[in-house]
Amino acid sequence: MQMNGGFLITKIKQLGDRIFEKILNEKNIDAFNGAQGRILYVLWQEDGISIKTLSDRCGLAITSLTTMLERMEKQGLIQRRQDENDKRRTLLFLTEKAHDLQKDYDAVSDRMGDIYYHGFSDEEIMQFESYLNRVRENLEGWKES
Image (cartoon, rainbow, N blue to C red; front, side, top):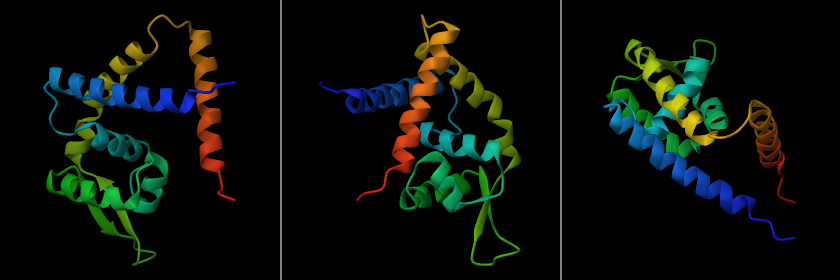
């Protein structure tokens, strides 16, 4: 049986990223880009996490995050603070400016959901997302032997 799932997921991600950026432009949102939106999304869920935790949750390598976080700090979106309990750890916090952008992000995200699930029933969406979660779990649990 020929499997094209990996190719399809990659293609969907590429198309989704392009459309996300286009919607940002259409809505005149220039305070963050798509990749920064992923970082903000994770921090809106839990503010004050370490860079390692952020890396795990948004799927970006720490080396990629470093430059992005520097840029976001200069843009006034995040602040870095030393962990009071462990001075070796740096924690990331959203600024008020970043908190104010959540509505904009949610509007773009809702539009993306409408595009992704056009023509799907609620049952199909739930089933599809359960499959995606299984794929994600497989990838997260994969250990090179």
